[in-house]
Length: 171
Image (tube, rainbow, N blue to C red; front, side, top):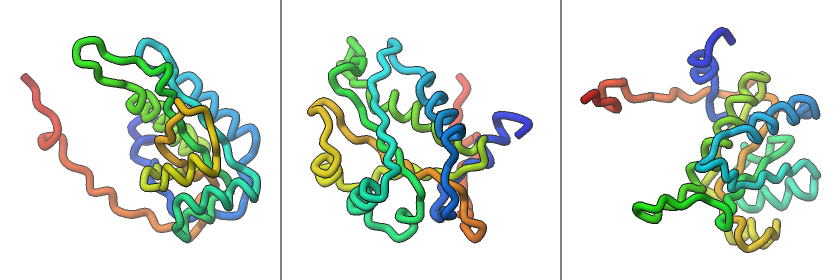
């Protein structure tokens, strides 16, 4: 890609993956992009669990039971660490979800750069996920991200973004 704008325009929510495995070098590159994501006061209040095994994939698919979701060769579970998230002193706002979202977007854009597809999934059963993938109590699941090669017949949905004048105000 020639520009960051082109990278952003290329990324979309992929809902069908091929059987081709994700290479270790691509996965490591993507995870390095996640690692260097910024966070409030650089607290890095996150943990990312890569789910590659057939057993782990089947368990995770129970948490979000959609046919397209099961086509991904691997998943990444994004957790927020409530014990280490920054809290804004003026109003007590916890910033952990924002920090994890920034890191997940790094993940999605890095995957797009490598020609791979992802999809943010927040509509999952967090109680079942916590039961099937036990973590420390302070780790709260925020998102599931399927990751893989895009199937040739995957349909790209129209994104229908608002125009700048609807979302930007200059004072």
